[in-house]
Amino acid sequence: MRRSARMMYRRSPVGVVLRHPSGEQVQARAGDGVVTVTGEPVELLLHAFGRSAARVTTEGAGPDVAALASAGRGV
Image (cartoon, rainbow, N blue to C red; front, side):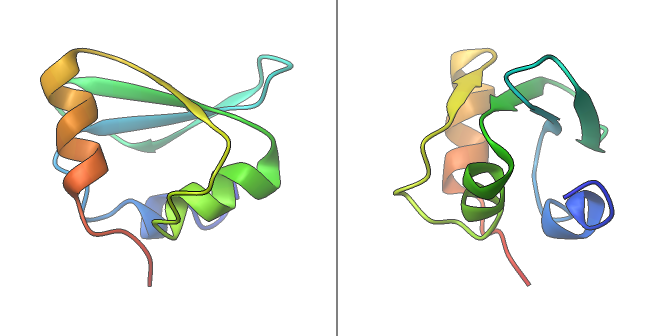
């Protein structure tokens, strides 16, 4: 995920930080407003591809989380 995170979230209208439950994290996209997406690596990958079945939690301001959820993701 670390290598492809920037590419996967390039269309995000907000900043995105991906976090493993252990606390390790990577900034996928810089931007105004930041949404932190936490989950296991395979779940983060599912989220990056826009799969609603991904078991992740999102933290951030309500409008930012909504903007990320409605953004097209994936390659």
